[in-house]
Amino acid sequence: MTRAGKSTFDAVIEGIALLRRHHVQFNTLTVVNDVNVRQPVELYRFLKSIGSRYMQFIPLTERRASTPAVDGLTLIPPTFSGTCRVEPWSVSPRAWGAFLNAIFDEWATRDIGQIFVMNFEQTLAQLYGMQSACVIGVTCGANPIVEANGDVYCCDHFVYPEYKLGNIHRQDLAAMVNSPQNLAFARRKAADISKDCLSCPFLQACNGGCPKQRFALSGEGKPNKHYLCEGFRIHLSHVVPALHRLYELLRKEASPTRMKKEMKAMLLNR
Image 1 (spheres, rainbow, N blue to C red):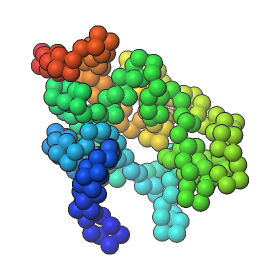
Image 2: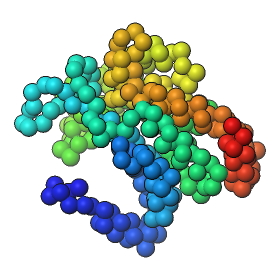
Image 3: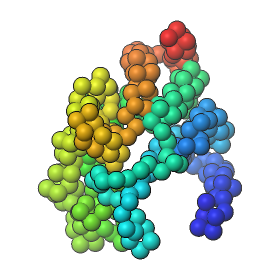
């Protein structure tokens, strides 16, 4: 919705049509909420129909704290662990896992080599020690954000005063990225990981997830477990065996047709 409460859908579709008309590649980033999470395959096929060949899906997990508002807004630092609730329009853990699995099965059996889904590619990369997305990496700190006024923060999920590194107009970007403050921020992800994660068979593929969403209580009673942990376990238990087989096929330079055939047989025989 716009600030006036009107839909932006038609404008987005018009923009995509313009890009396609001029042969400009683009990718789509879809926020998954409590509504569209119920129709994973329909959503995936719709994105294909409008020409998206590079997709990524991010889960909406929005919280509200029972603290006074500042200028009409309730601000929640990522380290907040007091009384709060997850808003009802957020995606639930189990629904998130089922959503990813449904899209994976559709993609793996129909579209390997034609459609690229970041969520699956990055998981595969992480499993085999390659560069992957920061949200599933061992550390943070490699994705700073520059605001319109030049302010630089450790991450676009942590745009709070305590995570400000400086300003691009006054300081060198490389110096800010390699500063003790940002390096400490990067290391904290592994240092504050839940003990539940350390015993998880999928630790290598997840690394506890993004710290922004680590606010659920772990087995030891600390608010440092990923809110969507159950969903990721559902997803990873479904796709990791298939991704290992896919990696073997990639190394053998198998054709997309063979990959899809083997994925279909593997998924149907479960």
